Image 1 (tube, helix red, strand yellow):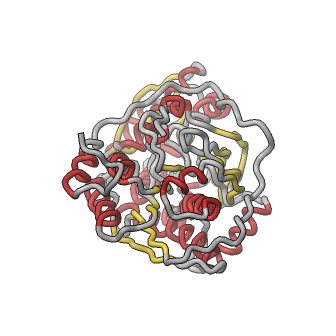
Image 2 (cartoon, helix red, strand yellow):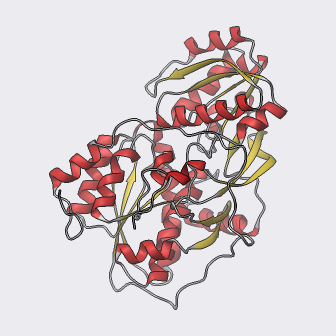
Length: 419
């Protein structure tokens, strides 16, 4: 057996570790409610650790799509990353971003991470964005003992059965993005549903969780359809939905796929015949203007963010984001995620007063702060519980209808800490 404890991985070993992780993903059972919360009130923002400033420029490897269907998503996440870095630059810290286009592809992301670790010798990694990328990166990052803070990719097992000392997530798992929605749909939207979802890890995990929790309430799913990420014409999927006589259609789409599907719902009359209730990226703020007001009006969504939040933390953060990135006219959850993923690592380094991965990981387990959309802290699996919001699009804004607090993923119980 190869001993990775005292050296970096060779290129061959690194590639083998990543490619071995490209298999299927498991979906656990639906939770009937939130997991037990940690005692005490929501944490206040954690202070600095005696003004610690690293004695060198920190290299930050970012796995981000800069082309393809998730290009706009990646750009918004990067705005959040840069804001968190800027806050620490104002304290005297120095950073070098090491960043190339992952294209949202697992093999490309694996190659980039290998380069970041072996050649660039980054201090930590941010990303990836896509659930299609993350499984391939878990083992190489873990074996190389490099901190990785994911800012979007939501595969459940990464903070479940495949948890790692070095991987942290301030953003929701796919299951967390769905299971609170199913019961709410049953109580408030309808009893018969049709699923149309993207055919990849995020799409199927999220749709399956919605279905699981919705049917446990007594609801019925009349059909389950999947559309590939390469889809360019959503029209063929509309007739079966119209013929189903369902009360609503649900699932998961994001990016360009979401633009096309929402336009098709409107064009072919689906939106006039039934409710649209999706996990919260269907009309996210980076794409809603491309979709249009008539196309998006009335759509229900479920997400750990809304631009309608009026907390002091959110208001202050938005002002800083607008100053840093004036080109952003609509704040997105991707910027929130990029920010919290980055800040968690920087707080860990600050608290550890060290650049050693083991010290940073130990410190990050104790990090607590209030992010733009709610508290951030890490459970033993390195997954943060999160508050979620039921929203409805009204006049191109996501108006909060309900709050589902402190959501966790029950698969965290499958984490077997070996550190």
